Image 1: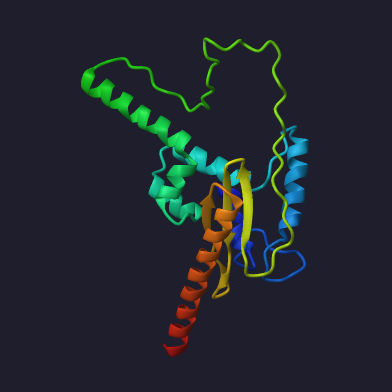
Image 2 (image 1 turned 90 degrees about the vertical axis):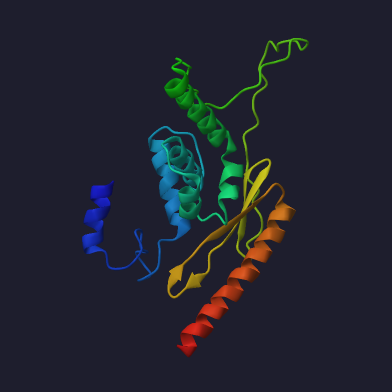
Length: 213
């Protein structure tokens, strides 16, 4: 992939990795990317996921392979490292356990078993009967809201208890993204509105300074 991107850069005519074939200087339409992504998944016989889910896959793999929280937080556009810690706590908890085992091995000279990155499943309690037939899990369907007005950002339902708000304004010809997270859609909308007001004020100040320079 690195070789392909390096070769692409030699002949690139704009800043976008995936430029629009019909609008010069603009990125490719997200709907077009999504459609091609679903075709690739179907051809590879993979389950249907959102393109946005690749972001979470990248973040999880980055943490599992040693990337520090602060670097990852800046790379994926979180406001603070605390946000990243809250979302990927299932990974960071295992990382802490692994760090403890390494110390135990080095200092204590033990052969402690290294924890693996797996999703924990709580076993049934002794007093509860073990179900004889598993209940089919309901397929997750993200909330699809109405088309939002320009400049109001977007809110995405990541799972039953987590919403992501994103605002992506264009500054000096480039798009910059910031994200907020909340446990409910209402809370996420409030945080997103605050983020938008803050970013618009910062952008206005930047333009003012550039004009006076």
